[in-house]
Image (cartoon, rainbow, N blue to C red):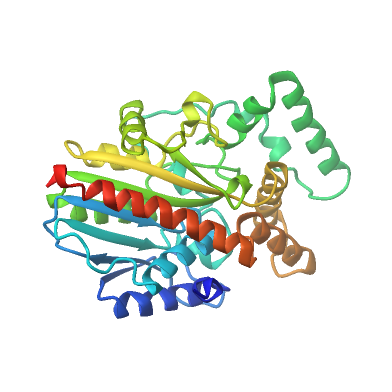
Length: 364
C-alpha cells in the first residue's frame, strides 16, 4: 500500500480524500458545518460523519479523528487508509461503523489543538449545570505557562518557575496541574470552557442518534503527542466503571489508566469518554484513546505554550509566528513514512481486534 497517499498536507485535502473514499466504499454521509469559525482562507469548516451498516444494529464502533484539531493529520490518515484498503467490506450484519472526521475542524484547519474559543474539547464534556471542577493547581503555574513574552527575560523566568514547581512537587504533579483540565483561565492551556462547545454539542447529538438501537458501543479516539515515537498507547478513559469494562474488553492488550498512574497522560476531567458514558445510560460503553508519540513531552509542551502565546499576544503571519506554527505541527504530526506506517499498523491491529470482539458469536 502507498501509505503516504492517505495522509494529507492540510484540512481541506484531508476532508476531500475522506469524502471521496467514503463515497467509493458506500458509506452514508452527514456533514455538520461549524458556523462559528472559518478556515484560514475563509472557507467553511465541517465535521463529517460517515456510517456503514444497519442503523438498527445492536453493536456500534465509532472511530474519531481531530478531537484535538491538529491531531487530525494522524486520525484522518488512519481513517482514509482503512477506507482506501477496503477494510470495512463484508461487514457483520449486526454491526454499524461510524467514522467521525474532524471533530474539531477549526483546530485541524488552523493547525491548533484547541477550538475557535481556545477550548480543549477533551476537557469540555462536563455537566456544566452541576459540576464545578477543580483546576488541579493550574492557577499556580498559569503565569509560567503563558508568559507575556516568548523570548527574553520573561520567558526565562517563566521556564524557571515551571522547573521550580517540578522540583517542589514532582514532574507528575506539574503535568497534572498543566494538562488535567482547567476552567478558570480562558486564555490559558487545556481550558475546558464554561459551556458545551459547538463540537461537543454536535458529537453528543450525533452519538445519541447513532446509538438509538445499540446495546454495545466501542469508541476509539485517535490522539498524538504523548509517549514513544509512533507507538499507539491504548488508554482507557471515562469513569472507573467504564475503564474497568474497557480493560476487560481489551484483555490481552496492555491498556493504561491515567487515574492509576500507568499512562503517559495525566488524569483528565471532562473528556469525551465521560460525556459518552453520561449521555448513553444503559448501553455497554467502552472508550479507548489511541495515543501516538511524536516528540519528547517537554518539546510538545513547549510547542503548546508557544502556540498559546502566539494567538494571545503574537502575530500569526509574521516570520516568527510561522516558525512557531511549524514547531507546533511537528509536535503533533510526524510527516515521515516510518511514523505513518507505524501508526496505521497499530490502528489496524486495534480496530481489527475491536471489530472481531464486537462480532463474536456469543454476542449474537
